[in-house]
Amino acid sequence: MTSSDLSLRLARPAEATTIANLSRDLIEYGLRWRWTPIRVAASIRAPNVNVLVACIHDKIAGFAILRHGDDDAHLELLAVAPPYRRLGVGRQLLQWLEKCAVVGGMFSIGLEVRAGNEGAQLFYKRMGYRTLAHLPGYYQGIETALRMGRDLSCRSVDHRIQGIQYNLLGFGVLHVPSSRIERIDHG
Ligand SMILES: CC(C)(COP(=O)(O)OP(=O)(O)OC[C@H]1O[C@@H](n2cnc3c(N)ncnc32)[C@H](O)[C@@H]1OP(=O)(O)O)[C@@H](O)C(=O)NCCC(=O)NCCS
Image (cartoon, rainbow, N blue to C red):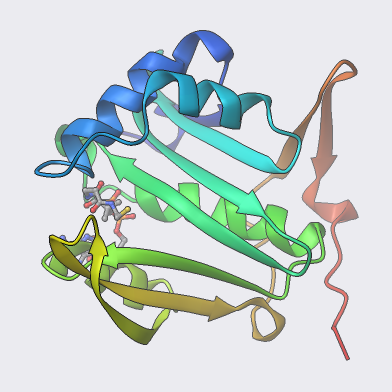
């Protein structure tokens, strides 16, 4: 895979089932399926949620969902299909969303990851996230979660990403080149 094979864009409503199936198979295995097509479709429509897909040759290779709060964002889901792992797809998905969160004025990004998922924990550590808490039984009473987070006020925007496209509901897509994106330090 070359970098030109990979494109990142906001998900379309018609892709909700594909994304939900990836969540069921790659993230929620062994648990009750909570990220159903209806829930993913609602996230795609929600004004405070970014549902991002990574496409390789028109196929969805990975996706991520970030919910923006008042000050902090929450990474709801992130997964890359097995054939495309360790190629930087997860990194690009997360960096795109981090950049979006910085532009949106978020102070930090938090997430939960299954305690048994060491690969994902190593990925998040590599991406600058640190473990904040252990939450026993967080996953339907079956499995512990690690809460991890990253303070966005001590990171610089990675200008290697060319820009961000915002899907303004009803107004089409706004492309913001990275040259127009500035960090504003909070406090
Ligand atoms: C976690 C996940 C998203 C990583 O995606 P990816 O595209 O393979 O990650 P990247 O290639 O961008 O990895 C970036 C860096 O993170 C680290 N990393 C990623 N996966 C790792 C693993 N399994 N073990 C150790 N380190 C890992 C490495 O340092 C890697 O850099 P390198 O390949 O140059 O060594 C992917 O493994 C996945 O989808 N797992 C199943 C779903 C999941 O666990 N999601 C997260 C919980 S919601």
